Each structure stands twice: as C-alpha cells, then as structure tokens.
View 1: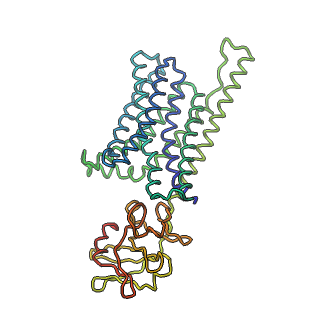
View 2: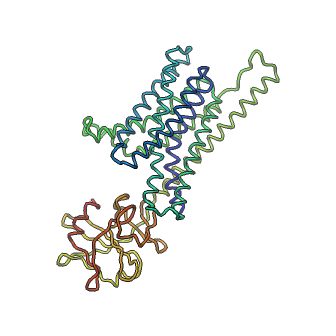
View 3: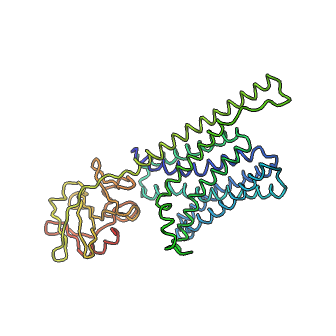
Length: 421
C-alpha cells in the first residue's frame, strides 16, 4: 500500500513544485509593484490557466488524437521560455534604473504568458496522473488500492503547493535585488528540463539532424529526471538568501522603538525561510527515497520454458490447477522470449494471458497474498478478468483445454513477440 501511495505522491509533488514555486516567487515580485494592472493580469491568467489546463486534459483524454501531447507541451514551453526571458531582462535592468512605461506593459504581458505557459505544461502533466490511475482501475473505484492512490495524488498536490506558498512568503521578505536573483536562477533551473523536452521532441520529429545531436543530448535526456533536484537546490537559495540578508538599516524617521519593531518584523519573516527549508528537505527525501521505493520492482519468479509440438504448446492441467500464478516462456523463431501466465479462476476456467499489458508493457505480473499484481503500477488484478482485454489486464491469449492440458497455438505465441521486443 505504501508503494501505491508513493507512486502517486512523488510525481504529483514534483510537478506541483515545478508549477507552484516559480509562481510563488513571481507573486512576491508582483505584489509590491505600484502598477496594479500587473497583479490583475496575474490573477486572471492564474484562473484561466487552471481551467484551461483541465480542459486540455479532458480533450486529450476524450479524443486522444485531437491534442498531440508533445506538440502542445512544446508550444507551452516556448511561450513559457520567451516570457521568462522577457521578465528576467526587465527585472535585471530594474536593478539600476526605474521602469519605463513600455517595460511595465511588457512585464504585464510577460507575467501573463509565463503563468499561462507554466499551467499549460505542468498542469497537463499533473492532471494526467490521476487520469492514468482511473484508466488502470477499469471501474474498480471502490477499492482500498484506488483510494490510497488518489490520496497519494492529493497529498502530493497539497505539499507541492504548500511549498509554493512558503516560497512566496520567504521571497516576499527579500529585498528587490536578492528577489530578482533567486527568481532568475529559479527560472534558469526550470528552463533546463523544458529545453531538454523540446529538443527531444524536435529530434524525434526530425526537425533537424537527430544523428548529429544524439551524442550531445543523450546524457541530458537519460538524466532529465534529475533536473528536479536542481530545482530543489535553487529553491533552497530562497531561505539561504533570506538568512544572509543583513539587518534592515534604521530609517531616518524611526525612533529606537520603531526600529526595534522593524528588526523584530524582519526576524519573524525569516521564520518563513526556515519553514520553506524544512519543507524542501522533506520533499528531497520523498523524491529520492520515496521515488526509489515507489519504482522498486518485485523480482519475477523464473518462467518455465516450453516448446511447441505439432504447432501446440501443451501445459498439463495438474500444473496449473492450484489457483496460483504460473509463468511459462516460449522462444519464437526470431529468438524472442514470449512469456505467458496462467491462473485457475475456478473449475475448468483459466485466465491465460501474456506476461505483459497494453499500458505497462512487458514488465510482468507476480502473486502477492493470493492476488495477481502488476509489477510496474502495483495494480491488483481481479482474477475473473484475467483473459479479458483492457486496462492493466494481461493481454489475452487464445487457448483451449483438451487432452488434460491447456493448449496454446504456437502461431499465437509467434505473433505475440511484438510485445516483448
């Protein structure tokens, strides 16, 4: 159950942090600005981005072909990166002089574009997590496993957006120069993964020479999941920068009592930095140790090798009539090992399927406490549905019971080698 919980919590937490922390730091920049239209734009786009990400997820799931996920997310990333570049340039220039009217308009438009781009990219990734859980459940929604998974997803969102809120409170206590610094570095860290994603899509679609770039991009593509730790590290800069921020200078108008109040307020603000630091340490532990445990795979029992005689693979009934999972392997003419599982469902009824499914691939199934479980997503199979298509069920294999054996055509197994390549 813990593994099922973490399988939903870890990706939901990571995607929520990628969305909420940059928005929290951006909000800390926007609120003190005298131009209220920038704040209004941020608020409106925040609402529209939320609902639009939900809408695009529904369209993606409902039509499958109407929204190409890779192209849609690439367009959102391009919008995000362009807006981030504009904002960073304006903010860095603001360190040395006042904003012009044109820069204020550009900052307002860039704020809306960045917010929308973040929501469309990370929002789609986020909402597709529970969609996959629902699809795999195949209507079995009133089960403990399904409840645990949904609870994991909700918990991931909660802690992710709590991190975003703490990032906002800690960033709001920074002076303008330090705030611009952490925002710029945060955007740069987030952009790394986004650029890798776009480059991967362009290479896959032969937009430019994939062969010439594959040697350069391969290390980044293989390790892009590690970018989340760069984002964590950059997020830790917020509380660290806050802790290193010097005590506020005494204004000319402040008497000793008023100055003590200013210092006390600055100290209290640093507590938000301590809260953010504690939350980030927790999320790093969850992403590392929790992610490892969530993706840990059960070892599969060795498959019994079988061969075809006169075009049939025959497995004696006495071997598979105990109600437990049995795994067999058949080597095709091309040399591919095709694995088949058999479990007695009751009487002379058997569930016969490939040790693979359409969703999780050839990762296999194992038996736990008398139940058949998918090795990849930890979904428990209803024995009555094994041998039926759909969801995370094993891909059905045609068979017949005759001559005291379960008989499977060799041609059927030869055709199934496409699922084990």
